[in-house]
Structures are given as structure tokens and as C-alpha cells.
Image (cartoon, rainbow, N blue to C red; front, side, top):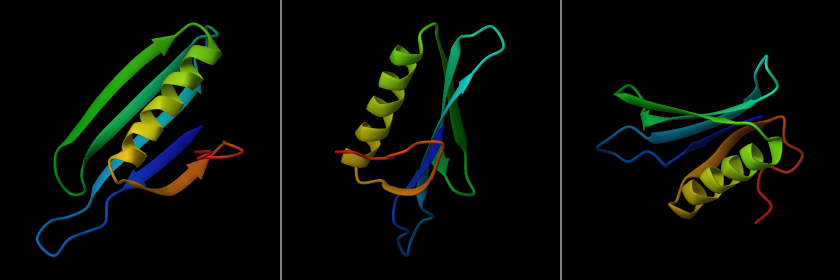
Length: 86
């Protein structure tokens, strides 16, 4: 599951983005990867490992909803039936 969110570009700076991905690892756990930054600039990356899918999915949804509240717009969603149900 993956979502890509982005702010609107302004005349003075490139848009900011936030990408969240959730994948099952080879041992049955779940890895939540968050990547954010300004397009064409520095990037930050954070990975979190969860043993249970429900915990990982809740963290994914929380991260997505927090960025939507900050003004990011959903640009791309893959692997989710309903990318935003709020």
C-alpha cells in the first residue's frame, strides 16, 4: 500500500511531498516507510517495523490523515480500496 501527497507549488519554491508505504516483510512483519522533503531538495526517511498488520495499518492511516490535515493533497494511491475515508 502506498500514498503520495504533495503541497501546491508556489512561485518561490518547489512543492513539498510526503510518501507513505506499507509492506509486509519476509518474516511476516510489516514495515511502514515515510519519506518527505521538497522536490529537488533534501529528503528525510523514516522506517518503523510492526509485528501486527492492524497496528501497521493504524500507523499508516494516522500518518496519512496528519498530512492531509496539514494541507497536503492526495496525488497517488496504490493498493488501498479507499485512500481517504475522512
